[in-house]
Amino acid sequence: MILLFLTPPTPRQRKKSEKAEASLDEDTNPKLRRPARNWIKGVVRNKWGGIIRTCGIDGCDYKIGNPNHMKSHKAAKHGVDVRWYTCDQPGCTYRAKQASNLKGHKATKHGINVVFFKCTVPGCTYQAKEAGTLKRHKADKHGINVTLFYCTMEGCDFQAKRALVVKQHMSNIHDIDVVWHYCNLDGCGFRAKESRSLGRHQRTLHKKHFLNPNTTAPVKEK
Image (tube, rainbow, N blue to C red):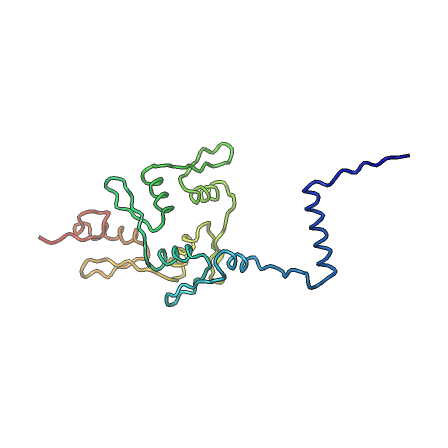
């Protein structure tokens, strides 16, 4: 004769059993099935009463459910109800619309609460105060996570690791979105696509008219 001793189920086991029974009921009775949840709409509905807030500024189609995010958007993009965060360091007039920007400024410019981002490549001792700077270093020096930017002109295979370099290339080579720098000396019609070219022109041809060879401001005649 074999005796079986059955122990009562634990609370956790009872909970799992109840869930299994409920799931079985939903499968056999379509009326008990719960509708599929739209997670984005569900979050908005549950936390902020189903309200989707729109910016309301002419030409801006930004919308979101979180009222704090909307407030931050209006302050940062449109200057509405801006709360300025000012640097408290002596002689510094920097201010920002977001506390995180001020924190980054104080770390970068004043060395306050600096968190260094270090290169993880063996043998490299490079470190930076900003994650973006470290990312550029690893791409430029070590070829890690490189994003190449290409010239969009047909037949041109120019490429670079930075969008700004491609923009300069397209301006200098293909005359796209050119910003001209003009010589401000009376009677001179020189212009250049780069400010350094204008400075070189002025230092070479108009040296006596400029007080500082590194500036483009002409000397006032006495």
